[in-house]
Image 1: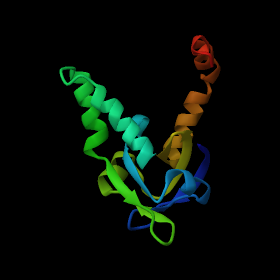
Image 2: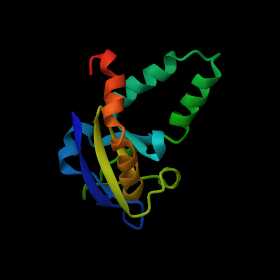
Image 3: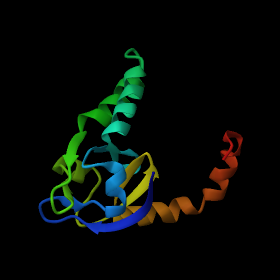
Image 4: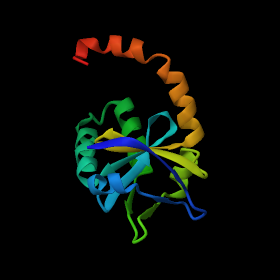
Length: 143
């Protein structure tokens, strides 16, 4: 299970260290793609296959389904951890998520999210104010 919050820095070549606590669950090879709210999503190869199956199930005739599928697949990149425990984030993905130096990697059950540190702090400040309201609205789902 991927959980926790880790602060790291991207080097000048666009490489990021994978936290040791997450490395075992994410694997040596994984997929990085554009995520929602301006972050990146990182999936183990197994989780990526599950995600792909869900995208394949979308009806081709639905415009929103095609748009969402393109969004996730067009920028997706398979990455591999090097001997120093780092992986390269493609420049288009760094640009999308505004990743320059300081980042936060968070575990979200079956995936990781990579956020620009400042954007993560802003997101938390904004969203933490409404967590109780969100929890109430999700009570019907058994949360």
